[in-house]
Length: 425
DNA sequence: TCTGGGGTCCTAGGACCC
DNA sequence: TCTGGGGTCCTAGGACCC
Figure 1 (cartoon, chains in turn red, orange, yellow):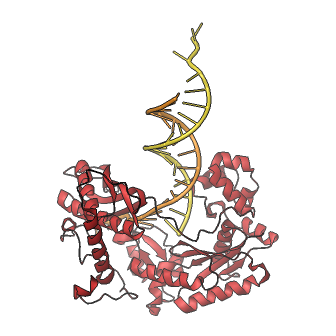
Figure 2: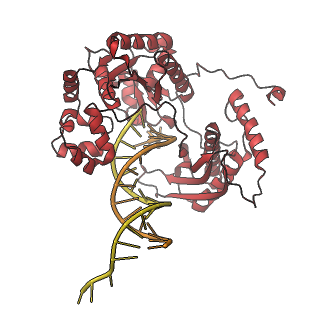
Figure 3: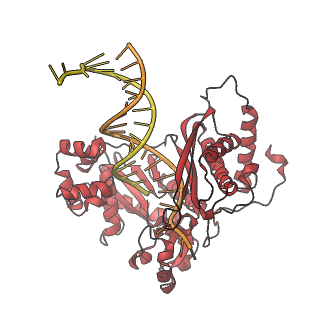
């Protein structure tokens, strides 16, 4: 039994999404910014050519942006999520066994496709995705996931490959590993790359010559598994269904420095509500809620403060009202006046399916009522968008709101007119 | 003025138990 | 001087991913 995987990766995904709906951007440098218009998180090839790096703070490249007429966009995750769905839908036409690995990457199990012309087939996939969605993609095909990653990277880099690389022949695999720098290997981050280079391992090929014991000792079983994968032994299976999340976090930098408890409380309540909605989305409840706050770590003049507080709730919940209640208690425990706060966040953990909750005899919450209310709120949000209906503690002040000065329209979703509510219930 | 956000897995070491 | 030993659970921290 020989395995075969394809990794399909969208090129410069967020930038490409913006281009789909505004073709005048084609051929021009485009960047997409993180929340709060903070950092560059996606770049078109033209923007890369200008030397703009991933993670560059926007304010530091503003001159270059103006001078070189770079088009900058605030991130529009609703749009990108929607485009991602379209790409994944298209890919699943080619094999029922797909793993949506991230918003812009998908593994395809080509299991026993060895008999077909993999090169033509891959090109067919690539052309179809672009035709149906407008998003350009690259494909790497190989016997293991880690090798498919290698193939994909080279497919993008090499002009000859032009976006498709099939690595099944041992000689080609060896050449590919030789051409792959160790820090470009999937699973080798900054620390391991430095460590390996210190041990004279500079390429993926040199890594495959290391002994398994040595790798296991210095890089845990994860490294040992990677080693096998690069040598052609498949250890990582396709994961078609994603398991429910074990922790859910909602955190944001504020659009401005905040000091008062009320402002931070309002922001934090909104993050708590978002966590609750995510929990309901995967049909689970959480027992622990953690709140953290921090000042601006880049500001040398301001006094710095970071703290977090975890509260164990009496009964696992996914109700906006309860989570906001306990998040506020946690915040109260750590908030100190006279600091300039820049960020807060809410993390929920000890997550269990919503049908396995341990109830408490002394419980004072009417859980049935909460659940019905949340159900209605979710329906309203799905239909009319965020913040149309919310818990009072979430406030209307929104002085903490994110900066988003360059947002494109939500091309793929249209906000409905304000409702006549009766048919929702 | 302005520096992202949300996840996963693994290990070492301490606490605790018998 | 010499101070049991083995198992399990939990947590913090470190590595990684996009």
